[in-house]
Length: 56
Image (tube, helix red, strand yellow):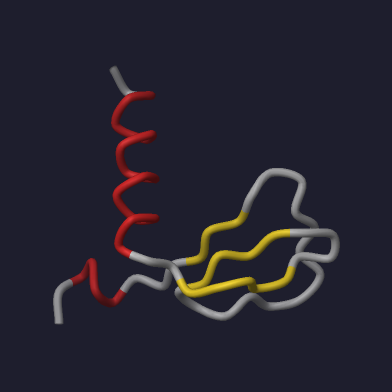
């Protein structure tokens, strides 16, 4: 297993209020913050693309 695969991932959206632990590999939103679905490959690419553009 690579270092990248070992990383725990959560995607939290702006305005989310985290009041307890969020499981790994989920998209979570709301107030209070709740998991809504698993992170997909498309989510991973979209987030990386936004990050890469912000570094230009």
